[in-house]
Amino acid sequence: MKKTILALMVLLTSVVGMAQKIKPVLPVPTKEHLVWHEKEFYLFIHFGPNTFTDKEWGDGKEDPTVFAPTQLDCNQWVRVAKLAGAKGIILTAKHHDGFSLWPSKYSTHTVRESKWLEGKGDVVKMLSDACKKGGIEMGVYISPWDRNHPDYGTPKYNDIYIATMKELLTGYGKFFELWWDGANGEGPNGKKQEYTFRRFEDSAFKYQPQLMIFSDIGPSIRWCGNERGIIGNTNWNLLDTAGFYRGHGGPPEDTLNQGNVNGKLWIPAEADVSIRPGWFYHPKEDNKVKSASTLFNLFLKSVGNGGNLLLNVPPDRRGLFNEADSASLVGFAALRKKAFETNLFAGLTPVSKTNAAGLVTLTYTFKKATKLNAVVLQELIEHGQRVKSFTIEAKEESAFGKTTNYFKIFDGTTIGRKKIATFNPITTTSIKITISDAKAAVYLKPTSAYDFGFEIKN
Ligand code: FUL
Image (tube, rainbow, N blue to C red; front, side, top):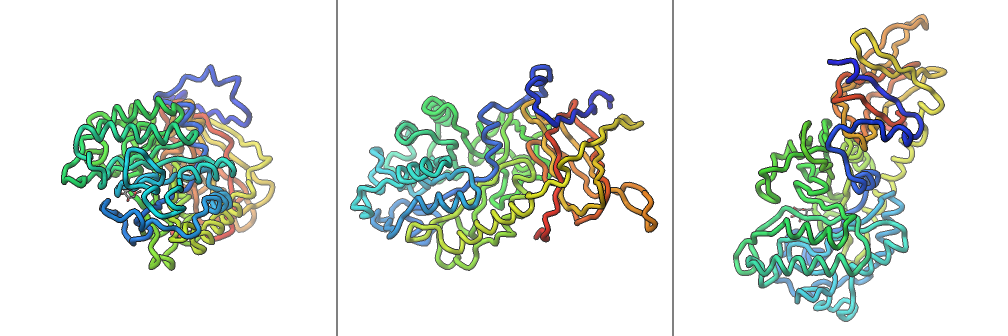
């Protein structure tokens, strides 16, 4: 392995001046990807007839009047989202039952046919107004699978789907993300649909070029391969999609979970998971809401592995986030604040060295023995994802206060956009980070270290 490959550049200041000189390792993220990566955590909202019928998948035959929230308040969703530190909200504007949360002119199964606000309501509008007012972003889930639409299963439905998207993407301002679910069953006439996804994609980007489109294989963001909120410890933002299809026909789940080391496209992972067992609200799950510490752990396993966390919080039958969910979300924010409040590397300048084997190390020496349980590493991903493996070591002190050896506290693979490396709390005077393998010279953002001050639940 060439020394040059392992030359480590630690950039403690802005890289603006250098940026042009750095030879990228392809593929690199688009500027929209870079904006998306910084969001880290945002909410998902599953809401619709299923909320009232206690189902997860409505069959599209529900009477639209079942949709009857008594106190629907999107400002409350936004308030709680902000308290939780979420950067946006993605709403199921249309789930598989085909019910549209806006009065779509391409459907007869919408809020208009319900009695909510005498059929004059529009949840998409309400949420979009609330997000704008609250200063957070909004995205939409528009299920391609539609169990209500009479044209589903015929070529005409593809045109209807595009018209439906157009209605949403041109009528409510900018969305940050469009979510395409992989589920694809039969429509009301028993037929399955052959989707023209390429056309869907072109149309969506035409209406909103800045959109990030999610599906199991992108084009912008990929599914992380499970609905448990866990992205691989090894996580490449790269994916090969040739020969794969959305829905059935995608790459194996562990490939989605880890990406492809030499993948041709920048398609980062998003972890979608619900705060409750179901995606929609069910009263019997009020006591099954994930705790703040479970959510914090999921944060470590998603954002801490370089992807984004999309956390579903289903409003209840009032149309409000339930008290139990709100309490967990606020607790989750408090844990993040506590964990990342004090950067123990602040004010320290690391010593950067190339050892005999040509491996580069970064050594931080504390002024006095310091307790820590986490180190956060970040690559400057605009130049491509490079690091393949690294280790973290801590200096062991002898009983007589004399310096002894370093011992390993963390063995890592990828870093990517962010790696939150956690370990059992240790008290040490020095931390050594070694990048042991990389595709090319590595560019890191400043590294930080923390003592969370609480136990991490597994
Ligand atoms: C799944 C859907 O079938 C679920 O109902 C839910 O929307 C989840 C996020 O994706 O594939």
